[in-house]
Image (cartoon, rainbow, N blue to C red; front, side, top):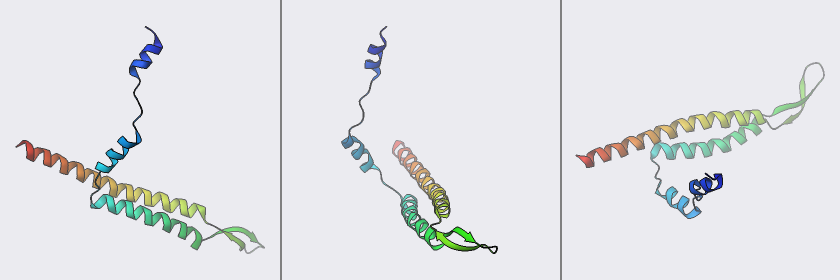
Length: 112
């Protein structure tokens, strides 16, 4: 058996962009999923604002440790993004579970 012939038999074409667009346009979001997407977009912007509002100390002077220069607080921004991602992912998952249960219920009602 030739390896290249087996590869040719098993090879599948990559999906076209039109097919991907058609599949995504069929997707409908319920309230929880819309809430999660909007909340993440708001939290993404708010994370940048928080990083600027609470700057980190760039360098300190003297014995007392006063900040001479402040810089953007990147770690606070990334931490806020991570926490908001987890919370929004939780809400999105709840919405997805609800949509799956709704579709199962519709199929059960049709079969009766």
